[in-house]
Image (cartoon, rainbow, N blue to C red; front, top):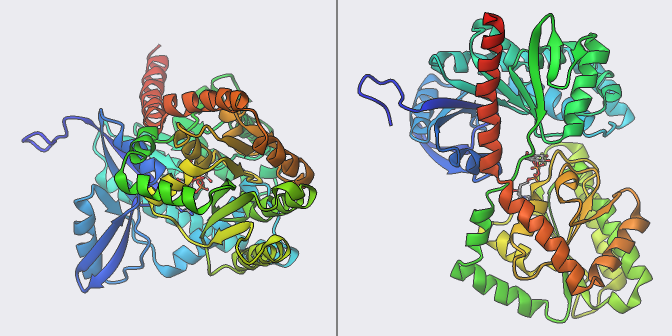
Length: 489
Ligand code: ADQ
């Protein structure tokens, strides 16, 4: 779609995220296989038709040699992806260290164990230095590929420094930043030694977006209380310059899920699953195996429900699918064995020779298999302790056109603000309450289920990922134009 003089016809959108939407695996000296991940962000941006999107990010591999870097860059160019090369030491300090050991738990209100907390305090400065250095490396790649008029959209907690790096180099660049996790209360944020630097760096953007109004409000409070700036209904003002701050709740590509249910293989899977679990209600949990997802709490609540409701003991099954993440980190290994231990105990306690109450899989499911599972589920259990949005709840609703099952949803997931009226909202820390809500869901009248489902289905199909991306990008365009008009006046 480029004109003969090589200037793009459509406005270009440079999407900068820590990870590219493809994973590269080296097959030979100069040969690469590229695995495209069809995540929410990818399909969201495929739907943004009036912009030509390019991706900038890390491909997830260490490529120390020049020739490998050249061949990977070439292979990725065909997918409209531009790599940022990070070496092992940077990945260790920036990604594993500052991003995942400090920002991730903090933004989700999770404390670290005492010994980790002390170790983290000691390594804080070097990790923060690596974080800034990595952000500058992303900025260098953006600057190299930027053409005047491009829009630059930075994503997530990995790249909070990026807006400042970009604006320092070129103050007329249109820069937006979106956070996929919660932004915590300012009282939590102010415990970060680098609290002010991070806030100032984000404020360099023209538009700053969050999933919910609450996260946006927390961010504005942090800027007013920690930096002493002025919060306005529009955003944050610093000596006459406004950074617009707003909520842009993400969605999913709901059509993709609805269409998948028509695929013959999916229909076969649905039939098979229905036969396998005939006579039992199916409950489902689908999560990355992360502390924030509240998986042990969910399983303990299910145990309590079985304990208090002997009638249901052989009439309900919980399928918990947990994709392992960060398997090299001791905390995550501990979580895995904890979950295995609880599942084993409950299955030993309530199982028989012919059935067990919990099927737990430590793996990722392929898209079509996941859709079939969503479709046969009677009750979905999303019990995140904190979650920016939680797309699993949206995907479940999209696949429930026939069944109209019930969603039990944590009040600490961003999704509670959009699907709250249709779901049963719970406090995931309160196992008694979650157990009671399982009973309520299983016994719910058809009329009530349908009413709740329609509410949620309408929301999920009318607030899609494509609309989310379009709204953010066009607001970013408008924000910049308004700011220019203000300066002219
Ligand atoms: P995540 O924490 O990854 O995302 P979520 O929003 O639920 O959480 O998205 C997970 C995605 O992975 C879903 O598309 C789901 O289908 C898929 N997935 C999860 N488990 C799977 C399994 N076992 N097999 C196959 N697929 C699986 C972060 C934030 C969220 C925010 C999103 C988007 O933490 O709060 O909603 O980004 O902004």
